[in-house]
Length: 198
Ligand SMILES: [Ca+2]
Image 1 (spheres, rainbow, N blue to C red):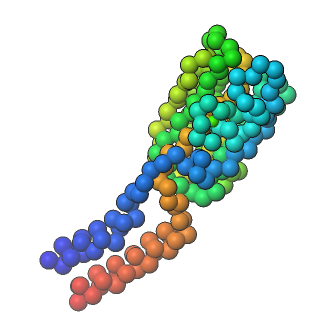
Image 2 (cartoon, protein in one colour):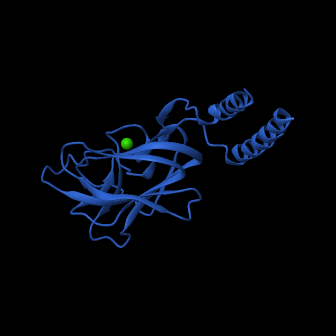
């Protein structure tokens, strides 16, 4: 009986910490985007310049960040999205499209996450097909992160992204609070268990 009561207390104390609230694309809600290169556009542009990094997280698949084309002194190009807090993230989706040129092109990418914007964890490397059809690359995850970096180190023509979608729990992860709660919860459980044993 005492063991059952203890198990119930454990479930009550720890279930709320693992319950998930709404999932959404966090990038347009919280994201601040930066880059090392923005192409300023030229004549006969299909998309509306400037191709600034905020265009990669504006929730619009028809606008894009464009770093320029190769060769370029700023390569490898990168765009960083800072969510301003730590979040639980379930997947990242990258979109690219080039309607100006209909021939086949590609651009390679390295996708990183970070908690502090200084130490980066490589999540995936791959290629984005870059032609007139909107290309979608979905990367499933189970991670806590604050920063996402997409690096484009090589390709056949443009370095650009129409959208970086970061899907996760809309409530930030309160790391110091969670640690404090876990600590106080364990102390409480130990005290209750001691009482039950008496
Ligand atoms: Ca966009």
